[in-house]
Image 1 (cartoon, rainbow, N blue to C red):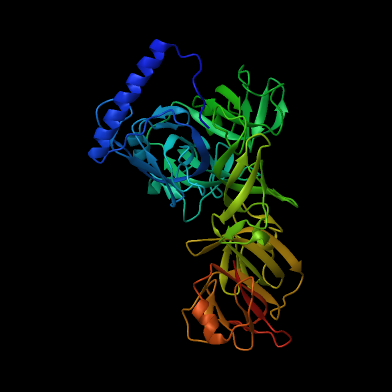
Image 2 (image 1 turned 90 degrees about the vertical axis):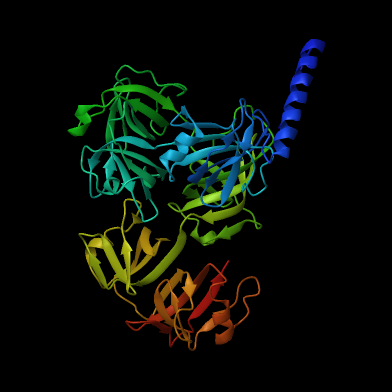
Length: 506
């Protein structure tokens, strides 16, 4: 939305027109040279939060906001926005240059405000502001599982480490962590960096608990002392459930397991979507990445942001059934600024959602893994539900839901369905590939013999398929769902009491 500038007198108008003429002339000159003439101050049409996958600084020509050639910033590998010399950059609220941000490398979670040329699917436009942040900067307070300043940190194979040493950090080493935090305070790291030198400021963002007025509060397992600091933007005072950003100077007490007592700043922040300044009404194109915290009849909540889904909402790498607490998703849609409701046009699961219902054949209580249908499943601090099954051993029928990251299965929820194995009733959802000889294919890495099974085509027709037609479709759809199969110890076959069904998921 653009707003006019009232009250311009004739002289001011003349000066402004002169500046516009000069900018236009320079813009034409730059265009003739193949450059970009964008200037700061245009209306904002969209805002988003995602993981930076690349930064290419604009090439500056002369002064001001003109650029000899535009730069770019890419979120989540697919959303590339044009940048120019006037694009504003910051890390943890401190202004930086595009070159500074590019030097940090990929993996930082950032908020990007895009001009009114933003595309309807938030995949292109001109970036006016790029604000990258760390969730926590401070000492490792525990390893195996990893904690930084008392916060559980989960790394997966897609976490971008700045150096190999960051993945093997020891207690008291200082780590810089960027990522997304779920409803229970667990950080799924998108980037780790072992601080080369002791940073002057430690930072911690999280949900407040156990407030002792004027004395202390907890974030995760870390106690934070007020240290005489008055919390900012916290309404009537700091309350349990508030989300805060804390700054502190390095504190030797923390490295010995004590409270953080060198606090210099406590600021309450609004979780979820950050509305650009000046917006009080109208609609914004929005792209928001985070964890589902709750599901309801009209949609779900993402980082405390209400999201409404409709019959037209498109799902990628998962389905509406996969919208459960703990799922990490990216929502593209339109935000009604006045009501604060985000209507989703598309929901993309950040990791391909997978599901297995089958007997547990083995477990490792030290490595915290289960084996089901020959697949190794990993427990992390993100895993919820009947997590005790990782200690129980084999023999139980268990349903595990989670995500696949570079071929590794991480559990987000575990549910023990019966105290006994039933190899004649197994179900699997995951990607299917034609890497074997018909009638056998691979589903989530598990061999499946489709002989005798009922094979259904994609929605909405769900037409019954012959085996050759089924194999022709393999690889064209992101997910398959197999229900009521039988496990013979090496592959899934048709259940004699079935039939077993396989369907293509949208």
